[in-house]
Length: 483
Figure 1: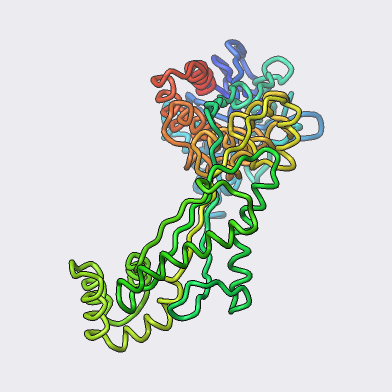
Figure 2 (figure 1 turned 30 degrees about the vertical axis):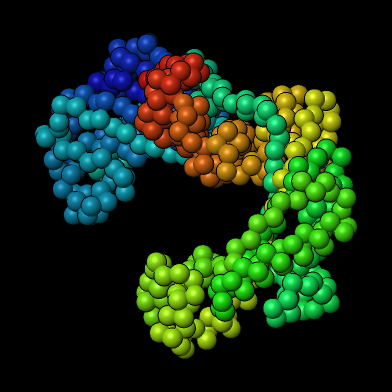
């Protein structure tokens, strides 16, 4: 029997030995040649692969057992055996043991008179640290009658100290590509909300002690306080828009919406010394849009008919009358459950945050007031830390929390998550990282971490076509690794 192309592959080590020629059926090995050994990095298993060229010659009452063994000191692991049976010995074990034969489950069973020219042997075992530096052995045993071992020898195919080389994981050979966010010309921001202030019927006067008015008014004042008391913030404007519900005459509703909006403006102006041109007002006499949204998302009866009226071309008063007269029961439900929420005040505060140039101040704000920072300022803070360090990764984690929909923030956070070993978070961020060449490169990196090398190759190729120079290196390393 000739043995060639023997290889052992692990997540830490790999042996490939070509041209090992053995005489299996002789008492000792002859013409043993060990050359052309090479090492490559593979997954976290040990795979033994041997191409066997077989020669006939086993006696009819004998069986020859060939067992690959990985051994180092007192540690060893045996792989499933290849057993060549003489004619009588084959049928003896078949009658005695059935399909289990001589060595049990996993055995490759061959008849001496029906040997194929070549057997491609493969077996796998989980990698263990002691396997680094181990020897690859082929144990040959000749069995005779009554399971007596007539001959046994161990043939060393490869010695660990000669052939095994430790290589780093593929991902450690590649670099991450972080993207520098564009600086903002102006750090303009906005804060908005809804306040539901109860006014007496047909009146435009605010009574703080009525219903929940005090808490609703506090929504506006608290939002203003949060930015006015911030040393980095300059308020540009406060926009107030009042809405009335559709019941009643349009002209009266217009008067109420306008007057109530002005009342909220005056309330705010009483507590804050705003320039008159900084408080902007608007009003909507009848909040049909809010009504439509409510009906569309509800389980109300005759929804389609109600929506048809709302979407129709009638003027407001005839439309409201048609709705009330056509769907009387549903209209009562809308009056009770929906209309109160249509009478609201929308407010929006537009403000500008000062640009911050001192990197130490930026680093402090990352921990205390990250909402003050632009993405570019977050990046400046990250640049002061060692890439992949805990502080470095934290900056990008905080940045993506502040800018959860931004593609660049998600891309950089994905890279930071991969470097920290959090592949689940990286996958989540990459889903929102856009389709840039840099995002494709990051997806290739995630595929490498997940050992999805075909996918990695595709993503790296896309990144290379998009001009990411690191992708060309990644493709070369991936090709070398796959060999």
